[in-house]
Length: 142
Image (cartoon, rainbow, N blue to C red; front, top):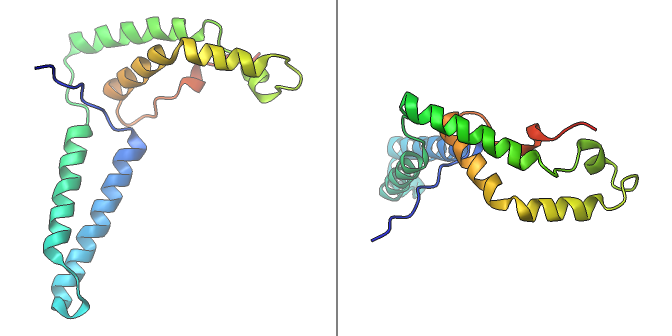
């Protein structure tokens, strides 16, 4: 039996789930203090909160040992070099009318590097879960 690879939530996704959990918890407390007069189903809310807890726990990167982290950082640097190769510059992306073929260049670059970009983002989420994994930081200015 092959186990599916665990998906690591982005920082924004994790914060969104945390906010939703806070809102539901506040609603449950409000429903308990006012009783059933407002029609709040506290049991349903508790199930939703438990589900959110599970999602957050399963989507959060676990602790990484120093050796594993070093290997991941090395792989991340290799991927950065591969991703940068042929990547349109920031100027080309911001001024496509002044850079003929920039859109096609970007589309072909994106297609060629789709797997590398995904792996790079996954590694970045594991190494530093509280920072956004953004490949735009790799783009050259000119």
